[in-house]
Image (cartoon, rainbow, N blue to C red; front, top):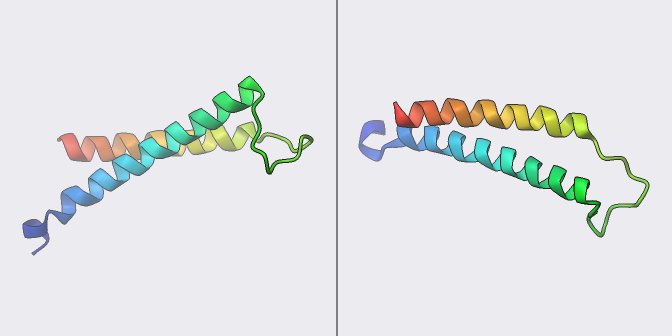
Amino acid sequence: MIEALGLDSLFAEMIFAIGLAIVLGNAYAYYQYRRGVRPDDVEDDAPFNTGRVVFLSTVGVLMAVWGGFSVFT
């Protein structure tokens, strides 16, 4: 039944898409930080956590590679 519904490939595609979303979201947040743009609800003295951006980007890249490898092989 799993093969008939294509759930194996759906799971790999979801991992690929979530990994790409994590990478793109963190890249956009870092880009906005470098431009000096801050969200309206964040105080001016709140620190930007660059370590978190690097960690989550790494996790996103690993997920995207794993999902992409599973989808395209």
